Length: 460
Image (cartoon, rainbow, N blue to C red; front, side, top):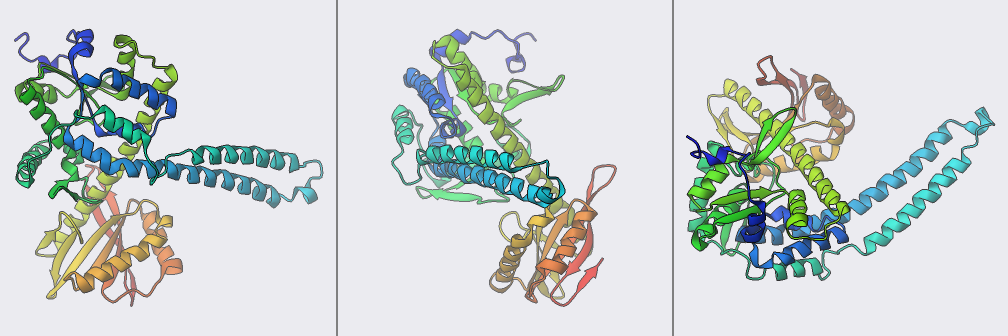
């Protein structure tokens, strides 16, 4: 049996020197987009490494497409951070002054003079805001020429894989992806619900692309290129930390052993790749320092690590929300099938479910609510959308199901509805607030709490 299952041997001796001398280095979209998140010094050091490897770097066509499509989103997010920080600082200044004013120290405690503190804090804050404004002026603007984009495009000139031949090829790949996702075969299956709460598809070059299959399409293009060019050693660099790329076990906390064994097996079996390795950006920098003698500073490695950590945490929070939202939908569906003979599920689009009731088509749109206090504006959006769908979308009425995770949240939603959000509901729109109850077996059950319409509010 020795040597029969090499994909399950993370401790096998690896000739890293040979990897760095011969491998094709393939980069994921997130690695290129992260260049916009790094400080200039870190960005330049990473670009220098890519330049040293220039004859052995490559990206699948779908990576290049995703980079071009998502670059503006990253730029806008980076620019938005300036106004967010400014808001935090100004709020802190105002909050300090207001809280001290409430104490009325000039009348109640003549020995305490808060003026030096307030003035000192204001001076410090104003100096910070001035420096922030200066940095902001140098930030890449959305419509300005983009020198970083030019550098990336120059580095990967003639280093981009071929585009799919057309819709038929893409549809065949997506058909394979869907079967794999159902069996949780990596990579990409953790993106199976990616299109549920955002734009599901987009068109490029007359071809319809589905967002949830992006990771698998990149993997497919990588293997196809390696097989065609008979490339035997590949190093894939990605900032994606999900379990459908990395082999993780629990050993005094989670420990990453390397690529998923299924990926190594498929790389060999399908792509003809003898040596398949994966790096996260931090590891890529560390090894480049050793094998390319690259001038990578410890500060750059720390920043790359920090950016990856923040992205991973944000992605984890997003997946948690999506999983909870999916659990809410399943619970509402189980509740509906007990009430109605036939419930139609809508995998994409509006509403989530539809039923026949007294000869009418009734839609049910499910929303998980984790912060009832923040729902004021959202309630109006939900009403407008429901009213439009009930008049233009072939529905006779729509019930908006607001699912909370505690009875106190359900009560707060109801109280806010009655005291602040009571608006003139269209007769075709109803709100149903309920609680997601989790029993001892961790099954989730939807429990209706209150039903609210134009004419009445009924506690259930």
